[in-house]
Length: 431
Ligand code: 4AD
Ligand code: MG
Image (cartoon, rainbow, N blue to C red; front, side, top):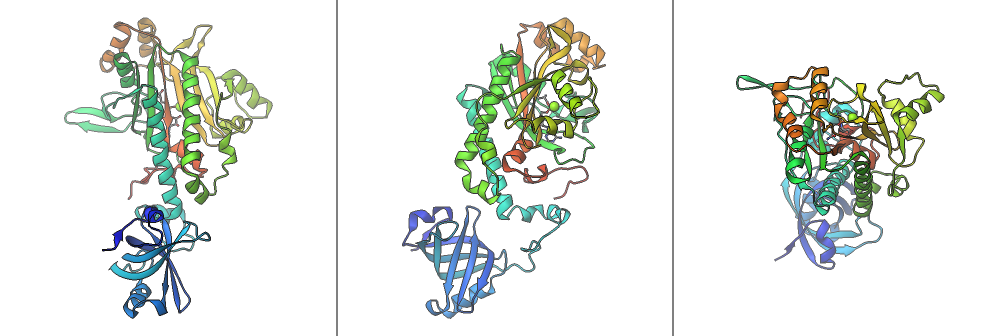
């Protein structure tokens, strides 16, 4: 009986005959030899069919194979230094499972809209596969980082009665007779969890009905939100830089092949370790003004501003101490300058923009009540959140990492639409 294998596993079967379920990715033929580029999800391998060495029906079956036809291939594994995978298959048998007609994504160039309409097929391509593998590796690295540091994974709700990050970008849905919203951030619930478990993190989908059509915005994206009791602003920044360095170094170590498929210049990632530079909002404004940007103290930053600052460094940079006015209601004021808050945005290098937003949270109940009033937030919906300040309030901090922007940066992609299996974008809900 021929051993069943995957392309990834052929390295354990050199010299043996194996049977692999796969798809035809591409084919070249010289009349006497057919070169089958085969893929099975675990990898790619070349199968060589020599006319004089196989029964006629095997030769003919191979001839019938079109792009993305599925088959069982039987062949002997040979080491081959010239091939990308390091191995080749001398084919003895081809059993057709299904012949594909007119596969829409051909090796020629296709427009982005066409590819996005065929996203369910596009993910079969080597580039998209490499991205999804790196995404999965990043997720593993994230879980490993927090698990090793004794954070507990906590799942906040997705259906919520109120908003966490401002009221204008909410997806409103009916919850029987009540109004409900898809979560924009699990943070407020994670604060409750931190008071119960100390150090916690969440990993879940978040939704923002942002009418932004940029290369950094998704409508549905995944966020990692750690929250830490008894941790102040500075200490949180240290966790953040260690966290991001760990992700980058893990991908460099475990995904060299995939980064190569993406032609990523990895020298730009190799120095992502140690402390990251910090610049205050005040200094960032001066920096931008000196370079001719029309920006005033009190303005929020757009993509060009973030990029101008990031270009100055070869590591992610923290922009700290923002005006309270332009940041979320829950951020703790700087005791030395109460018009500022103890917060930071981490801006990725190479123009990938903000990947982390975080802050120390207000722990004083009276100030929290004031902020609720200023932001016209209904106390009814947030009574539970006030309770966290009423019963054993402690200093605490947390942050949120956007998974897709992190994937875009590490993979070196132009747009976040390729970082998630099925992107939800402004005006795109299909497939
Ligand atoms: O800065 P944000 O809005 O922060 C929060 O939601 C906090 N509650 C997090 C916390 O402190 N627990 O979002 C955090 C990160 C951003 O830095 C960005 O990386 C990502 O989430 N993000 C988006 N990613 C893709 N598409 C969007 N529309 C995004 N909006 C935010
Ligand atoms: Mg932010």
